Image 1 (cartoon, rainbow, N blue to C red):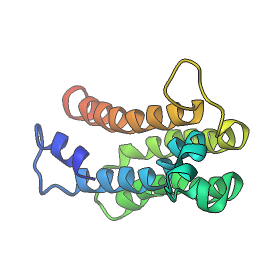
Image 2: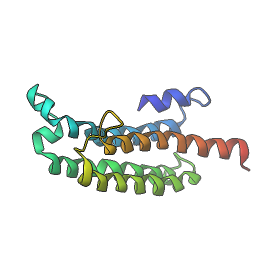
Image 3: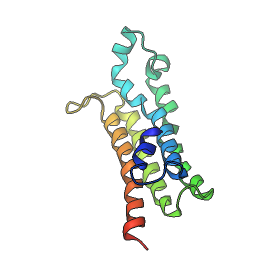
Image 4: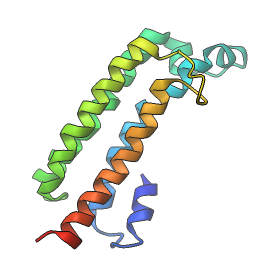
Length: 151
């Protein structure tokens, strides 16, 4: 939540509702997205007593618990627009991020606990981080375009 707000403060005002809404969307996304790291760590987590979602509920149920966090947080964009907390041109990001979240959700069923030989964790975990970066870059690019190149 505070990471985006802190970055916003470089160019904008901390009391603006925009960074807080975006930060809240990212915060809710990460609550469920963090689980992607746990799927490949089940053996070690069990051995050392870590109670992660996959350890406690099993892989399939943990995936079902995580899926809403890959899709629903992005409904915060149109809600923020409706209440005047986000600009209307941010609506396009809703469809991009929700679509990517759906892709990640499907990938979880196919390869949640498959270790990626080129990265620290699974391909799902990598996609989760790419979407997190895309959220930040997408909002940043939209505001840059609108404020400096638009109108």
